[in-house]
Length: 318
Image (tube, rainbow, N blue to C red):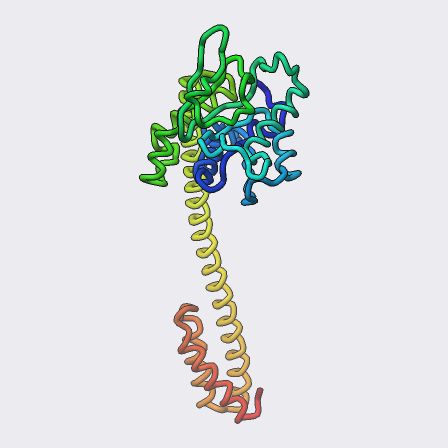
């Protein structure tokens, strides 16, 4: 496969109204087919498609000119409408894109010998007919039968490259979702176009695509398994953390209970000195409860603590 020497591998030239959907799907499929996603290379090719909806018979915009300048190939979606001359002696947009591509890549041509060796225009036949006249003295399109190419392509090719997309276009009209690599016919045609750009065989391209997708699936599976392991570890660590947290709370609770018991003992000593047997009895019960109850069942202790605290306040000993 040749190294990319242009920012874009190809520029798609098409008629907006009839072929916009096809152009969009074709661009996406060309970028996806053969992409090495397992190496995080999510595009196999870089394809320029103009998204403006400006009508024809107007000069090419700077954006389109730059797109053509930066593209190695031109993919022409050919149909009879593109072969028609522009209105009011102006060129139609597809004609301008073709002529600008040839001029930007090959410069001024000899008016006598205008054929270009290896002209990088891939013709995709969407509608109409194409016939090539192989006679040695002609070796050009049979313009009496070809009705979908603009005359600006006359005597340009030594031998053209074209892919028949008429079956794909028919399928699109029947079912718009058929423009997907999941459909064998569309995938085959996309592979034929891509193989010309990459300079490899169609079979090798499709085989590579299958292999790359398997590697990508394996990578996703490994990543999913790793995520599951991390989730399990996180759950286990979380459970251990909650366990330690509960232990810490229990220890804190026992500490508070022991502090409470200590304060009760101190209060009992005071009341014994005052010979207050009733208060001493209450302190004794609370003290025993403080040591007997677990922290999580200490609601009774809290209740008794409140009662005793109130009692202490009444006795003016707190």
